[in-house]
Image 1 (cartoon, rainbow, N blue to C red):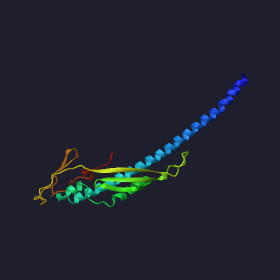
Image 2: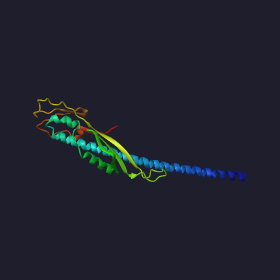
Image 3: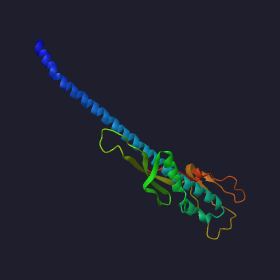
Image 4: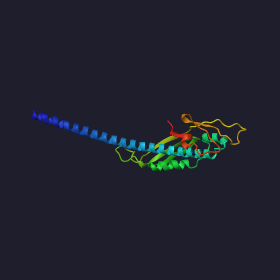
Length: 201
């Protein structure tokens, strides 16, 4: 009986080693997957921040130009439609990508529509060494799109009513109304009152 037990133990040992080795392999594989997931999440965070930064920069430019042109309501609609060049928005996007350990890549930073920015980033950090072949030198990529949404509407002045004595009333989100007095423009909407910036769903 003792010889039989030793034989059973001898047969079980290789199985035990195989099972342990398999579990170790799975553990390392999970670590590798986790590393890749963290890297991808970092890329997406950088892309989101870069897209939002570009859109917010243009939002501020549009709002600033609206303040400049506030006495000329004939120019308002173009501004609410986003028709204003912004050569610095993508530079701002690059700054935010860099702050998140990434860089603009691929299509980089585009403005496919006046009120939309799309960016693509690549992480500076590699996925790292793992048991998964061919991924150590990989850099994660991600893209994001941010949208500038006008929050206010108004009734354009009549063609013969451009003397500047009155200004259209702005009706903004939450039914907030701005009655603008051309002779007292100390209380004007802030950029966030005029436009919302959010990531596209």
